[in-house]
Length: 133
Length: 133
DNA sequence: AAGGCAAGTGGGTATATACCCGCGTCGTGT
DNA sequence: ACACGACGCGGGTATATACCCACTTGCCTT
Image (cartoon, rainbow over all chains, first blue to last red; front, side, top):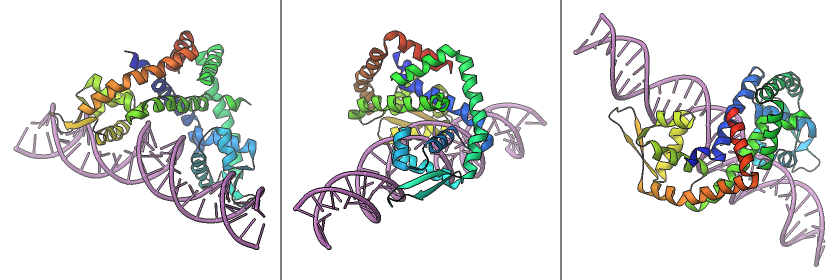
């Protein structure tokens, strides 16, 4: 009976479900929540290296590299070199800024919807609990 | 500022982190939490078709099919045919039962640890919140 | 200046996960 | 009995994510 309450499995289910909410909202823009979020982080830090970005988003460097390559293919970010020839420096491309602008209200709507469904207080509880894991 | 509180991204981070806890605990057995959990579900329903199992675990049929194939390669489950030749029926193999037995206490320890860290009450809150998403 | 270690990437491999398409099987209506 | 729609699955493709290894570039020490 306890196996139905596995924290990990429940988290995964919730994550898949919630991801789909955001993905659906952002679908008109042709990006998913992971890409949109990464784009936001790049904007916040640009110009930024893969390593620094990976630290910031707490993902493996290679993961960020591959995800960034998709954004590059979509022409949302530009991948160039810094003074240090080893570093791949990321900057937001014009199309990327457009996506960021258009996506903001779409993101807001999903976020607000979830806050409303849970209730402001429980939504905060959730964030605290997730951070405590 | 609000973008740092994206429910989806926070859920993903928490899921990655928590998954690693379970994965580390189960590592001596050579399986991860996803495989272990799937194995438990198969045991509960065996013999079970891919479609039924997918419904139960709320994953796409093709996903379950591929995951099951890994379990088959590890010789933890057997994939055969039912009377209906279309169906792939899954059953637990001897090695699978062994993994289930040996894994139970390992799984318990992680689950208990998390419950302890959060406190029983908050742990329940978390499960409720995740279910409400 | 040369050697050598550290840092930054990229690519290979593996799992997780979804969606879509094609193929084979079932069952039912005529 | 046959045809056709429904069902079950496998495989292709794409993203997410991690770990490990090889290659390049930097930099520091001798």
